[in-house]
Amino acid sequence: MERPLPLLLVAALALSGCATKTAPPTPDTPSAAELNAMNGRTGVDTRPIKPVERSPLDDPTSPVYRKVIYFDYDASEIRQQYADLLRAHANYIFNTPGVQVTLEGHSDERGTREYNLALGERRSQSVQRFLVAEGAPSERLSTLSYGEERPADPQRSEGAWQQNRRVELVY
Image (cartoon, rainbow, N blue to C red; front, side, top):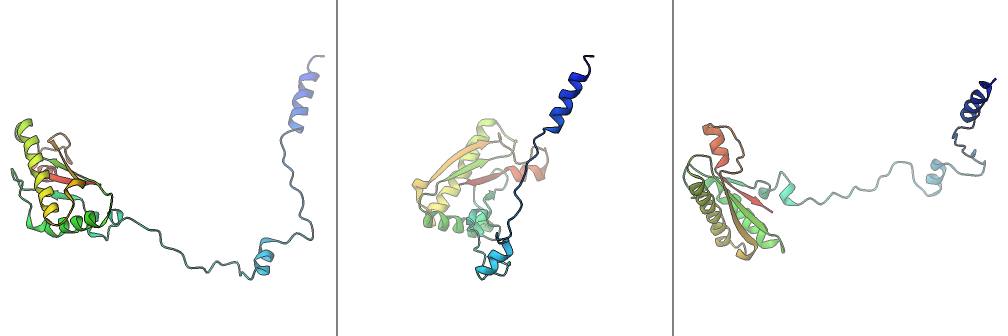
């Protein structure tokens, strides 16, 4: 007759579980709707919603949202199509105290490692000179070259190489 004891223990544990008890509301405790009515509220919050402040760098409608400048094959001259974009970045850097920007130069995989590092450096320096000429403080800009080491597109095609010939503005 050893069986009834374990069964009794299991039954006792099951019956004594962790049930939570909530106190029933008292007749004189007002409901949430009654509290709102007492405070002159209707239940619908009609206060204007304050817009969330977003950095122009994260706002797709801002001109400084785009942070990549592309280059022609074996070139470090800035294309005319990027002049307005770089002017907007220069203006943002000038008017935003404390902002620091690293100009990361890249190249496609064609050429030697040393040549591509030098080309990436020339590209980042070209962007730096443009930004400084447009008013960005030079002490808040730094250049860095990755050459071919960090391709945006690792494929071996003209389209991929075009994506890899770039300078990225990293804030």
